[in-house]
Image (cartoon, rainbow, N blue to C red; front, top):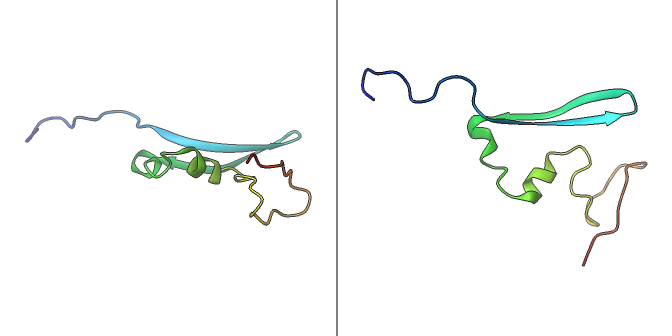
Length: 71
């Protein structure tokens, strides 16, 4: 509205990814407001996680868990 209060007030939505290794907790990724729009499907969301999708085509570092893919 012209000259009025902004429509949105306070905090906006966001997404954070954390990784736990034993007693250690790491903040791996964060995105807020408009940056979350690109994470609209499960594959893009999994891409933000430390271990990724765990697909056969990924070249995961030694020691990373790798589960068999379906299909």
